[in-house]
Amino acid sequence: LMGAECARANELVQCYTETWDECESLRRRILEERGEAKVAKAQAQDALLESEAADAELLGAREQCEAAMARLRRSQAMVADKGQQLQQQLADRAAKQESLSRGIAEASNRFQQLQATEEQMQREVLALRRRNATLRRLVPG
Image 1: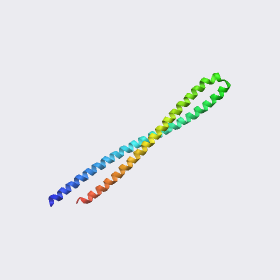
Image 2: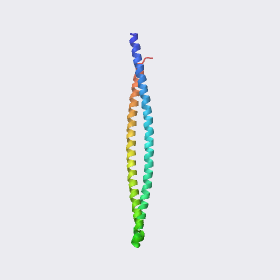
Image 3: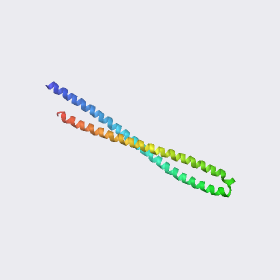
Image 4: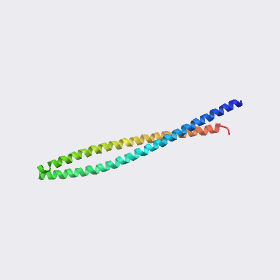
């Protein structure tokens, strides 16, 4: 009977050790995911700032375009080239704005995925902690 108790105790110690290792692995993964989430959030904030700057540039380009159109009415030959340049800038900035908007959406989606992953890992850690507590109660001593 003593040998069986010893074997059971060894099983419990091994199970506890494996559970501890799993907890540590999950903790490291959570820390990594949090780091990635911070990076993704910073990238999203940077993209948002760039988007706001692009919006301001876009508004400025639109105002410049309208002014060029007024000058075009006064002297179409002189301003035609400038109007084309401003239209190209407007198109380029609109394309940049669209790209930044997609980047923000992608970063936001990734951030949400990372948050969901972190929450799942936290639930797993909680389950492992409960399992550890149960194992500790089962191990005499």
